[in-house]
Length: 247
Picture 1: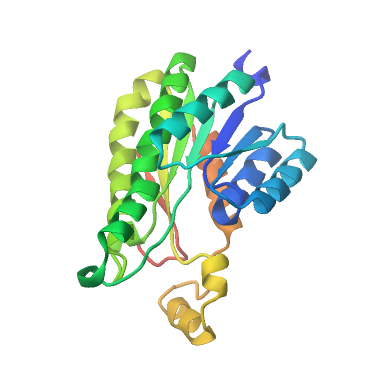
Picture 2: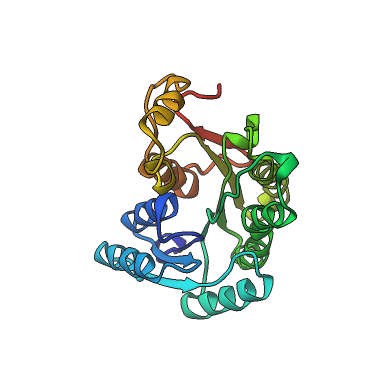
């Protein structure tokens, strides 16, 4: 009977980039997809149109994932409308790069709040829904930077390393209720940020990648779909999508 029920996914930061690609991949798999976005109404509206064209009963909810009250209010609205949440992709994130010695407290906290604390704020109410369902899959977006660090990204690396620890601990806690928790560690991915980089900077990046190319949001999305829906016996894992950057 469970297989006949249309599943529902929530993707944070789902209007652009990797989040958008994940939302589209889940819609193609037959899920109703809810995306969260911070402020770009046009991008969110366009993504919802794409999802609906794929047959998904899709909606976009605007709220700040680093604001606990906003998160709880909107998760309640989503659950009231759809009656379930089967897949959660914690994708929302920002960067505020700079050498640590000159990093402001604001830039540290902004990244920690948006990239790490948000995973707690969103996952806490969603996991309670999944526990009552006795099923669910959570995919957290980490980063290769959380595994090996990066100059000028002490805040980002700390947040993403925290996501990895969060994933492994939560996988152990929720397994008894048939809820799987995994993470993806993307490497250098073609996004709005990398599009603005000079050609020589991109060349230097790709030189260190065994596959000698940047990844695409779609490369990450197919792995997110695999972990969310297909990998029934996989939990507590961190899967790199990095062209062989880290073995």
